[in-house]
Image (cartoon, rainbow, N blue to C red; front, side, top):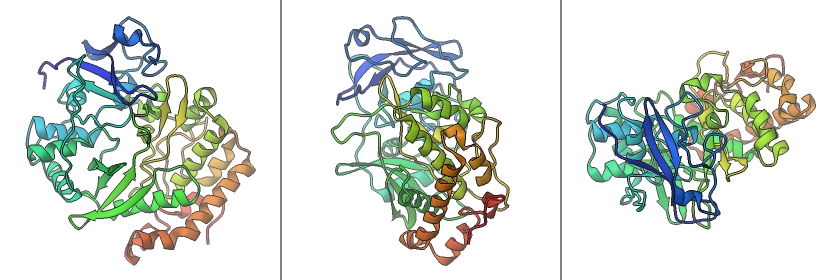
Length: 415
């Protein structure tokens, strides 16, 4: 679609502030969107760059540094593949599947204001009007997610409710919910699931928490007789306001179509230079790589990692989207390179050999690996019971996604 997009103003919740302020405007410059800070924002003593080095404070229009349509921190706040399907369902109707049809500003302006991170997008520079909706039940949201998958138009109320989730990363059906003081992401089962994927993600996330990794708390429930994973949001401080976030893709200076070049090794270099607490952060990054390998999460692309941004430094967020992927054979690779040499095999011995990239000795790497393996072994039955995973489901995951023998070649075979 080539219809003219309305004005798109970028609003931000500044650190420690509970109400948003307008930061600037997005304008079309040929095939890309340029950003210009507003004079009122630049005059604020507490103004921060939306992200550096992409959008430094200044009064000139700024073009994207990458080959993307907009600056990475802007794209991070845009709807994901699922969210764009929801918006297409609303704007185009039944059968619309080409998410490249609409201008990015349409997606920004039509997705829910309660998006991940600290940015929002409005057609006004003076009035922030949240695109909020009445609460819908999990059952209603599950039903509406199923309709979107089938290309069936929704009622206006459910359409708006589902748009709450349209700025959350990933391609699976989801929505954002509020439960008292808790703000949650709800991830639904899909009609295309070939195995109990939601239960598998719950098991992986719970095992990660029990193993001592920094992960978002999760809860498993049901709606429409199907599994729903509830994930506590970590971008909403208890005292109010919002925490700015950027994806690893943006941190690495890559556009969406350049994701195949994303590298854990490159991320490690940036951690040393720009992150708070770099040494424990590097250990956490390495531990997450190992845990992904041990649980069959090969969908560890750069949008499934993120950091908080305070205007000067980055801080690693809790882990999210740790989801075992479908797997039939043995050999597997991670989405991002683990070593400086391009190594990305899903094998422990190769990771241990490249541990110095993460500030670890081979011995320290093996301690981390052995601890995570033991944690999975010792908690497996209890967590599977908590997930109400039947014997068939446990057998499907065990030694296929979880602790696949391929991971241990050259290292050791688990009992």
